[in-house]
Image (cartoon, rainbow, N blue to C red):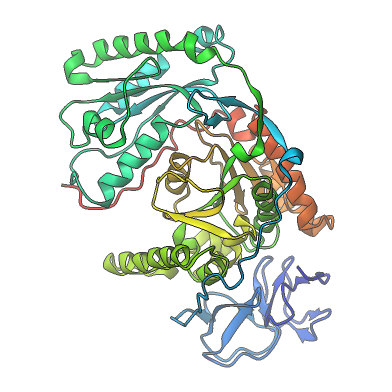
Length: 509
């Protein structure tokens, strides 16, 4: 990032807009830009630094973020009333910017204290989970989890808790197609997740999403750490709750019988996410998280970027770093799918950003995406995966998913994410079970206002001159502490019981 002036932030010499650091009144001269403001520019919003004719491109990050809806003189407010979006060509140039990764020698790689499971996978937490095949078993699942109280759990210090992961689907749906496959992958991914020491899956009995079908499709076998039953066969609510609690109590000693041990940081799979974004997201928190992601990849770890609608318009920057044409083509195919999906439902890709994003200074999906992909770092794109599909390669990957944070993160966790870093400018209060979630504030004002929810203040990039690289190193060190058991703010607040949201696609019948 270029050095900022007093009142504005210039991100690239070729840009024709800059970002206001604070509210700036009309008539103000902008140091270093030779511009006098014609409009009031709220903090985080953009102002033009050159004449931009109607239809000409606006550039930020040296990339196109939209087109002038009218003739714009220097010093104008460049936002939703003066900027429009229309299709334009973006050259994917697969692999042209892929470079060898500068890996840290194995003997020098970082470690953390994790839970090594019998199958070799590593967890960062040790939960008991109650999963549901269908919404009809949700209340019973919650009652089962609640039956194991805090006093009882105190006797099992290595168990982080019991969580019921319930959802709103599982029946009234086709037994084939994307919606069914998404749900099954999400459930299977959580059932085998290394942050669970034991799982109980509860169904109603007559639903479309039959438990036996799930087990057969994914080769899951019942055993001491994985049990199932249906409410109808168990004899109703009370008997099901008693049976479920009995099963969990039998699991507790085995789940508790594990201790953290030193494991290589290559066992970390980091899910990166942004929500409640603002204009500072692409300037502070996302680039800093990207720097931490680069460090993790250099240490042999994995980073999962998602929210495909928030890659839209910036996908060419990823395809150019793809390790193969096949990987680039997979990403382009998902972008085309989303264009068709939005059009089929009477929407458009520019329906994202949200009203909160726009209030924070983001104008178009192109601008939002260019900032959003920064949190994935700068290393090669090594794979593209379907929603909740198991990630089986190391390095930076994309998992297809919507821009709705809990939904995308449900898929990222199912894909193998065992740590989450979540950037926010407006102030998200997201938390996750069974995976710890670090919250990164993009600006100091929000951090101060919501300090009980925010783990790291990335506003220091602008306020204190901390470099993105320095902050990235700090984030990486905090990631290791949290992966080793140190609680995040959202964990201290008890978040995570209501954030399991599988992606629903298709007709409800």
